Image 1 (tube, rainbow, N blue to C red):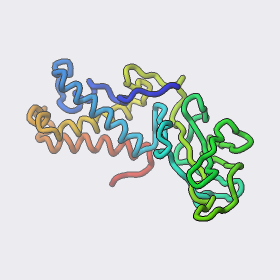
Image 2: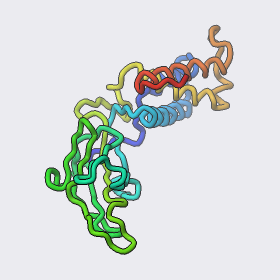
Image 3: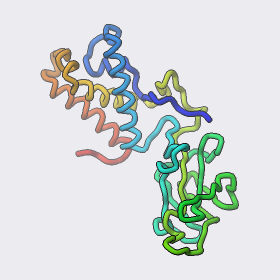
Length: 233
C-alpha cells in the first residue's frame, strides 16, 4: 500500500524562511530549518482542511482505525433505496490494496466489508461524489435501527499518484500561488515565535513585525479565497 510521508508540505523550507525573514535561508541554523519545515507541514494541513484542494493523495479515515472513518445514517442520504451518500471530497478510485474500504453494518456492532463488491453492493459516481449503497440491512432488531450508522468508509482524494511530483515530502507539482500562500502561512506562524520575532529585520518597507504578519496573512487569505470562492472580508 502506498502512503504519503507524514511531512508532506506544499512549500519548501527555503521559501518559508525567505518569507519570514527576507534573509538568505542558507544562513539559517539547522534548528531554524527544522522549525520552518514543521510550520510548512502544519500550513499544508491547514490549506487542505480549509480549501478541500489537495495536490497529493489525502486519506479520509485511518484504515487501521475504523473509529476514525466517516459514518452515515440513511436519514442523511439523498435517496432511500439505493441509499445515496454525497461525499465531501471527490474520491480517487476505491482500491482495497491502497487501504480503501466500504462497510455496511450487519448487526449492532458488526460490519460487513463490501469493498470488493463494486457494481453489485455499491456504485460510485466519482465525478459527482455520489456513493450508492445497494446492499444493506432493512430488518429492525431491538435497540438497533438499521438506518442508523448503516455505512462507513475510508477513502482517498486528490490527484492520481502519477500526476504528483514529490521529493522528500515536498510536493513539487503544486501551483506557484499555492506554494507561496502556504509559505506565507508558515512564515506567519514563525513570526509569532519569540525567537523568530527577535531576529526579524526591518527591510525598509515593513516597519513592524505586525505589518509583516499582516502582509503574510493577506497573501494567504487572498489565495484561499481564489480557490474556494469565499472571501474572508
